[in-house]
Image (cartoon, rainbow, N blue to C red; front, side, top):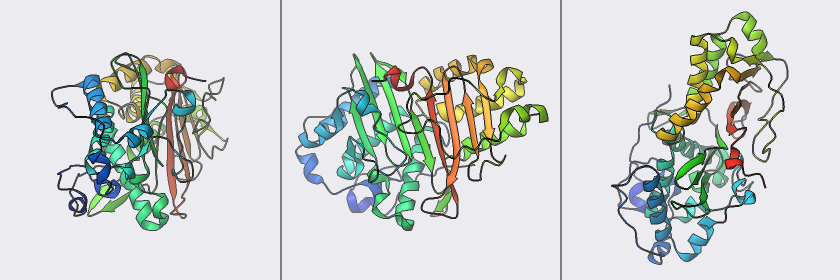
Length: 363
């Protein structure tokens, strides 16, 4: 079971006297104090606001803290070319757009992370907790052989369109192993996908704290497999090898025309609940209110949803693969070779929506 204990590290005081409960602040702050001194406007108190209104308020405050040059990097046009700019590779290998965390001073970085937190869920080890762990995972890679190509400072925040109560815009936080991309229109979340998560290492400990960012996803798929009858498993399992995600970055709108695998309408109530639990480990990554709405939609479509599995049942060996494919939901989980820790494996996973990916934007 993965868990996060948020702690303060000595490095925080090297960058700022501001208190924070974010364990990733130390690795992503920069000393760009001049940026804040030439900020573009005044901030306001967002503490009394909730939901979407608070999100827009936080965005306004963050933008007000930026210099004109920084703002030009962060505030971009809503175009398909822009919103599809994410990857599973470090930013040094697959450039991102937006403003990197490394270009922010401590207060700007804290404001950026508050935006990501507001977009994210509060469930244990999902949502913002998972985001923080994946930032830490990149810091771990940086400190253990990956070097400067890795680290939470190489994550980016971008606004595609202007965050406001009217009109359409997307907020994207993207880096090596996490992309959060929420699209809003007229004050409503209209798309939470694509949403990408991966981790290397699979788990680690820092200062006695254990982290395993995608353990819950892995375990949810294992439980589905364990709960099937022999006949159901035969329908679930394929000998086809999947060495990567079918709909990873740059494979947009490439959904298979035909569903393949075990149909969920053949499952009993307990087995269906195991599938719903796997869905929760993805939809709970976004804010709680919208996660509940999306989960309700996916659950209502469960009888028309199909499961597929390849590889071993432990979901911990290279080329192990699991898919949930519904009228809307598309989830893939792939086990791949390690990159920095070459003798180990690491996980890649993506949540997409067959109908509503990128809020239906295709060109």
